[in-house]
Amino acid sequence: MSRDVGELAELRRELRRYRMYLDDDALRAELSEWIQESVDQSDADTARQYVEERLNSLLDEYPMYNAPSVARGEDGFPDGCEGCEHYGSACPVVTDRRETRWRERKLKEADTEQEARRVFQQQARDVDCHRIPQFLAEWDTDHRGLLERGQDLHSRVEDVMHGRAQEDESETAIADGGGQS
Picture: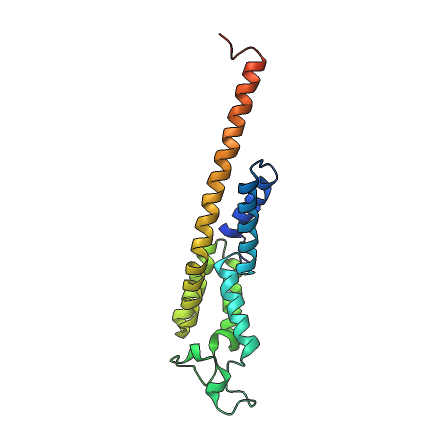
């Protein structure tokens, strides 16, 4: 598994830590709302987790090959896979052991989120899969706004925390007689 937990998880962790130190009830409520939304939007904190989640959900709903349980090979696939050269026969991304083992091995070697994304992109190119790039694009689109709002909250919280620290320093200087001329 990639050791890069993802910016979303790190941001959520930091905002949870800051939340208990905030005196501003409105800002604390915004933090709580964002944290909950970031958890509700997806179980995935990284594009890697998201793509794996989506691939697993395909297998949960469809055999992804021309199984005996389907009348036609195409019935074993979601409509979103139509147009793929493997549509109706067997999806190599999820049914070919060689492909799944290669992906698992490369993902274990991936030290960053970017490296994990490259593994998925390489596999998509190798087997001509158009769903993996769609999943990566979904992640980018769906999570970009959430991440930007979280980063904005983080900046606002740090401004409040920094302002409070400066006020504390001023009060200490006044109490020590350093603020009087």
